[in-house]
Image 1 (tube, rainbow, N blue to C red):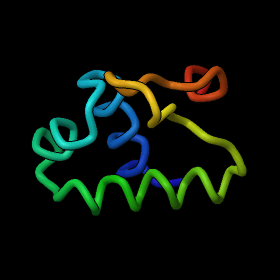
Image 2 (image 1 turned 135 degrees about the vertical axis):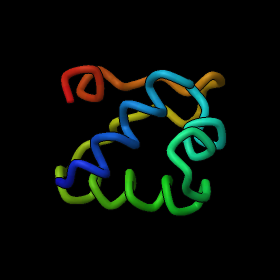
Image 3 (image 1 turned 90 degrees about the vertical axis):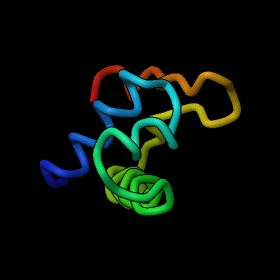
Length: 64
């Protein structure tokens, strides 16, 4: 887990949208998504429910 990945998680939580979070963190949306996915794989959990709009954190995502 890196500070960058944590900042991406916070940005998605604040903006509730991957593209807007990417814009505010000055990266592309695929980069932001890839880094969050990489962290989810590392931790073995799903942090955000991507099936809902706006995007919301899962129960474990709230704890992260």
